[in-house]
Image (cartoon, rainbow, N blue to C red):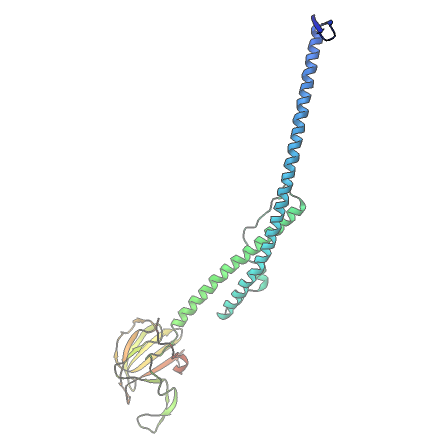
Length: 304
């Protein structure tokens, strides 16, 4: 048993209470329970207030994120429109190089690669729809870029092939600065002044000893004396092209030598059946002698 004495000085009252040990334990447990309940309620209210604040911040962040996603989607649409210029440029380059252009349907599909899978956890249908559109737009734009890259590689290879071919096509005057005299075709023989003969090349007059340049890349296939032509140099350029330089005074190259356009190969002379120093220049395409004028760019006097 426990005696509890209660004294009130204000009212001058004194009371005594006698409680059993069981009652004291019961009261203590009750106070403890009340304290715990009060603490739990306080923590729960504080947690609720924190969650509300956090939810408010998340909603603001989500609204800002949706705006950024929408802006990104519009930016991707702009880039797709801008890429149409690349497609136009690609078609222009292919047309210039006589290459088949890429069909618009192929551009729209692009080149396949690793696709993106947007996460669908904890996302609203609206957000998921925007993400799907963005990922799809990115995949298509990526495919277009890969296709453009592959196309540029094809174009570059074609340009290199064209440059290689161009380097082997006779296209310059073998005696720069000198004009063509007698042209390709039938003419009265300049020596007997009576007979009409076919002139299979063009004559380029120049003083004896003037330098002669090869008109394209190739290999010296023949250096010999030909009746009527005198000292003649023949160059095989490949791709069916050959050139001949006749009436030379001296040869400055040897047979089987590889020569580059603009390289010195001989000097002007008047050997063979000739009335004055000049170069008799012939162009042969697939075994057929053609008019060299069609293969001479008179303005091109600078060699690469």
